[in-house]
Image (cartoon, rainbow, N blue to C red):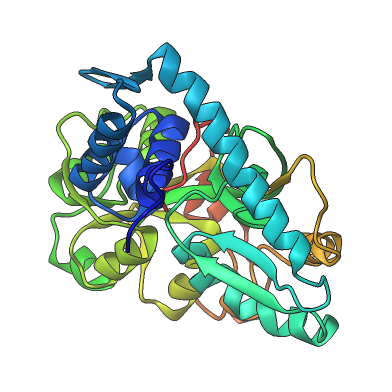
Length: 339
């Protein structure tokens, strides 16, 4: 398809906007679900079409040239205008409420709760985009985004949905096979499983005084794969309370250490545009999801229940002092969305 002689190709403009937003070719590729080399090719073509450089390349990223920064603001405004115009053309009654969410959170936490939403709001169409790409709600990419981290997300309003608690978990088979785990230092004798940004491990290790510089890692694209790899005995994973309760209750995973420190991790945030015309059902969905329990009753609790179905001997209440899980002080994380 031929493009306008006065306008660059749309894929090149999308790549330019993503690089400008992240100031990284690698992160732009992750957001667009294309390779870093493809991003580089789009930017090179755009610079050739314009006849001037848009970015300065550095060892650890890129920065704008003066021309590139001016052009970025214009391109970003154009994309936002297109999104707003498109939304305005769609009748509110038929336009779906668009939700952007990480695959792991969508599969494990959100989808099991959606039957309750559909019962309460049968006339509202919901479009769930399960993606690793960071939706720009300020530019109209989604009506609501559920992000994992601590922000900031420019041009947006964020409210905390729930705060994670973190602790290492392991499959029963790997725990039996060894090496044995008694202290946090023993974790370094195992492969540690992580998504592409090991911020959960860094938060937990920092709170527990564990140096991860000598760790052996297996990195996977997102947290859903991390959990599958942990169940398959490929290593020790950093468990997240909101996503692991069902696996722990079923015995597919167990605490990796006899006394496992549970550290406050990043949060799941409800991110919405600060300006513009919101979808009529946005506030209703935000109220509904904020009322949902962090852990469903059938998933069991966190930490996992002791023997006898979560009760002490003869059906007595469990003794919190004897729980194998103990909390440590919260640890603030920087923004992270790969999960």
